[in-house]
Length: 467
Image (cartoon, rainbow, N blue to C red; front, side, top):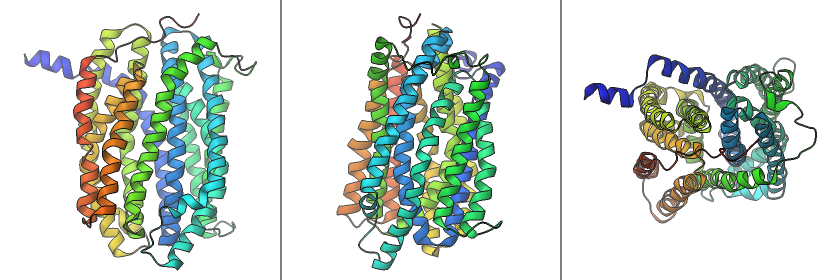
């Protein structure tokens, strides 16, 4: 009985080596990306609270854009991964074209919205309880940052499209190398342009934005150049730009399966921004503390987030190859592995709750609140890891309608109303309020458990597509 239990929940050494071979480069890449964001945040935080808050508010909007682009490329990537598992590179190329075109459309839409309504959106996060001078300073710094960051939407979206197709071929190291190069570039220009070092002008938040745009461009170029110079390892790249033909039946399938993902990522990220706006009702101290806490937790969350991506790749390849039972078996083992790994990461994160806030030039009350937020997020991390793994398992089999309800419905039916009511219609202490909203995610764990266990996601969606 014990042996059967072990065989069900734990894999062999070769299984874990295979998983780690895929996920470690992805973790390193995103650790680098988040580490750069963290250093950027700390440097801006050294300038002042108003600057840090203005940048933090704008990053909420960019977070929505980034997640929407991720959703846009993910829908086609489900098909691309299974086509690669099927060795149908021509149809994989069509899915890549779809990603590039949709990403370009999203850049145009996002740019228009942020140019026309950027100032009004920032004002939504500014509480009337704060002084007029602080509000105007935060707005000014936020707009300075936003105008430059709009340029960065282009390399980011192109880079995401290329990184997604490279990863689905199992080449997870290349995006990592791009991020490594971006790290050095960003550090140099961040320090130089924010504080006026290395003979560069002192530009504050504008310098932080310029450094980020340059780094994103370098990161995207490295992945793009590698993909186009290695057609033997990227067969889909041959003839990619000889027109933009995509079969109508495939386009329809991607839209049907992919639209729920795109809408889900947009609505989920938008929902997280709405929750952030709810917290901002309690003042800029809460905004600043959440910014500090989120900066650190994003760095540690990389492990379970990227493990989720690797789950999508591994299971998608097995489903595309028709290995349905192997996919089901791998899903169980990967979820257990993810929970063990994430619990360890959460324990490591706890001491940083007392160290990290002190890196910021801000009030002691902000630092204390940030420490509490970090501790709550560390405790919640295994919960997030489980729901994240459930999401990617359901998505790998093309059950995007269910993942839409799983993510979107929970956020907008539970978390957002809860945060809105507690922040606007009660005087509940922010510590208790933040804890209640955060741990409401537990409800999602039960839903994810029964959905994955049911096996409704075990599905080969490319069996009747392709050549």
